[in-house]
Amino acid sequence: MTAENPGPVEGTPLIKPSTTDHPLYESVVEACRSVYDPEIPVNIFDLGLVYTIEISPENEVEITMTLTAPGCPVAGEMPGWVADAVEPLPGVKQVDVRLTWEPQWGMDMMSDEARLELGFM
Image 1 (tube, rainbow, N blue to C red):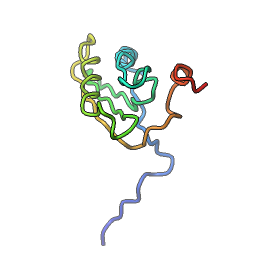
Image 2: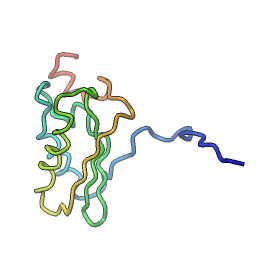
Image 3: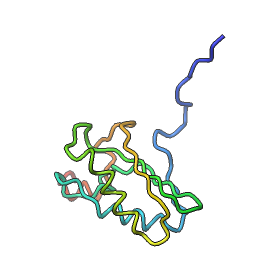
Image 4: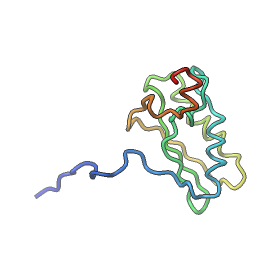
């Protein structure tokens, strides 16, 4: 008899929660806000491209992010830009940035500030 993968459990979030209670969290967010998609005049954090910021007790940072579209011309470069922005922060031991396409990014993931900046409000 084989076990079937039942899929996600109902109520499980599509995006893993961030480590918001870690002392480095706000600094990492601000570093992410310094990174912009060259085609959009809004930072990647407010665009909703950063899904999860996990920070271990040893100050190892893992960022899960997406892009506005899989064919984004900077898809190969943007994770490096994010790592380069976060790595120099005092106390950060290591940074790992991963791209995901699940869930797919949508305009509803943008902050109100981003929507206002782009004229959607």
